[in-house]
Image (cartoon, rainbow, N blue to C red; front, side, top):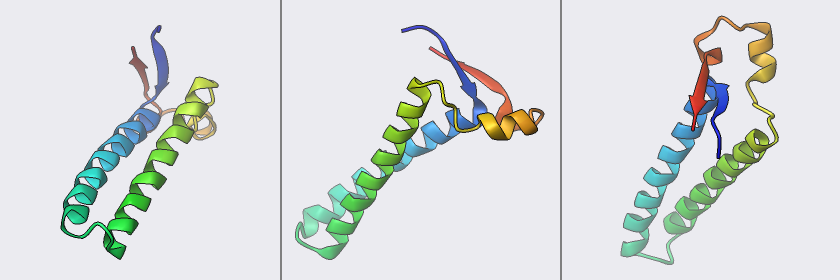
Length: 88
């Protein structure tokens, strides 16, 4: 796989989503270890699923070279979020 470029805002979003998934999975493990059938356990696993879907949706867009920051950055390229980062 080669080097890919994306906006800093997109890279930050990817990292935050990954961190959120990790954090929620830990929370789910802790909650569900106490009571697997509880409503809280079901809710936290739903949250893990929703965040995972958001990350997957972002990944699909990036694979199609559709950076979600493109429109914003074309109008305001000087913002920090529009700095180009290299991944790979």
